[in-house]
Length: 86
Length: 181
Image 1 (cartoon, rainbow over the protein chains, first blue to last red):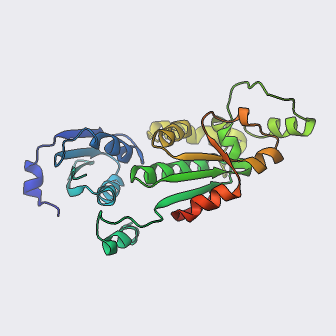
Image 2: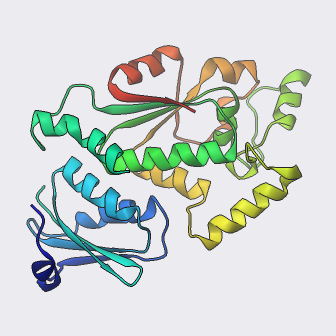
Image 3: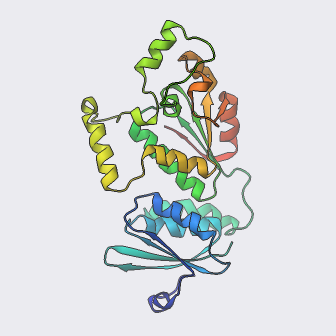
């Protein structure tokens, strides 16, 4: 279940993946690599400047069993939040 | 994009998210083409699938074999015939020598797209291939077309697999999607 904006903005990420300026499929691959370092039920934030990432990361999360929490769009960047569940 | 997303997630929604995995879950690809753009597309898909924990096998045949050729000098275990040597000379030696399928313009277009990829931070083919291998994507060279075009095992990247049509069909049978590129 995704969170509303208010709750998203209050989230503190256990790990932030800065994939700004990286093209597809870079952000997805960086997210996949980084999630191993996130504690179970911890939150990972993926920052991307590639709009496709906002579709890719939620689909990836669903596919591999993590929880997609939501995305904050901010000045040409997307902050995508995922809770590690697997 | 939204339509595609729904289509892609529909089967797992039916079977229950993250529960029983269906028996066939992989992705099998044939890379027949030795064009730069097609190889890029293939390896972007392979990396994306591998990131989603989908086992990927890529079978390289005909012109696609050139992607796997080592770029440096290779000591052959036995000498090649003249025809075999000619094939070797006429085809691109390795992934950094591939050309665009369209707008190559005697190499100008290919140089332009490579510059553009650098500016746009799109991973190079070499980087994509390395990422794919790091993620466990299986690369299989077709031995029949290797023999046909006079390409020897020692001329191809180390650590890849070799196989025939049976290897591909077995991989395809374990897959839910199969691509011919």
